[in-house]
Image 1: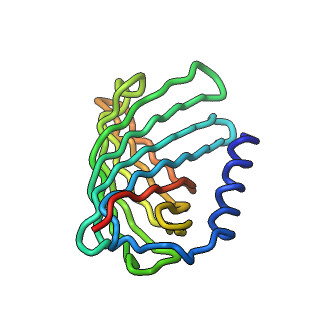
Image 2: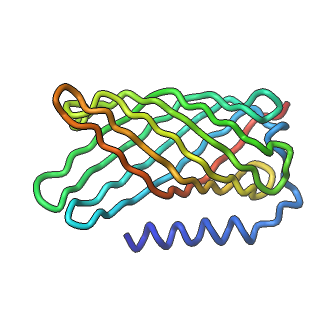
Length: 176
């Protein structure tokens, strides 16, 4: 937990300290690769750690992105054994200020197939998020977003809803 908080603080400081003088806009890039993580400690329930990786193709003058998401999810309950899952599926992002050189807001939606230990309990995952990308230099950004995730139960298992804050980095490639 301490390492996660320290890493989050470092990324936050980088986002605010870095100079956007050499930044380029999303409209000038062809693809985005991003990595993010979240940690949730629910009292009397347990801990959940999720790490996400995405690759998206940028089109429509930077407003739209479409690609794939791969997530690793580990649930460590206060009592009992831990379980994990891999979630793989498509992701879509809409950026509402792609011409801004400092920051853009975004909304994102994804659908994923659940596998691993939790694949017996959940069929698939739906996620929606809203956030901001703070550009750092010419080809990177610090991402902050609030997410809502629904793991849809398999058979007689109940759905599980969760939400939280996530921080990560984006690396942009290609030029138009």
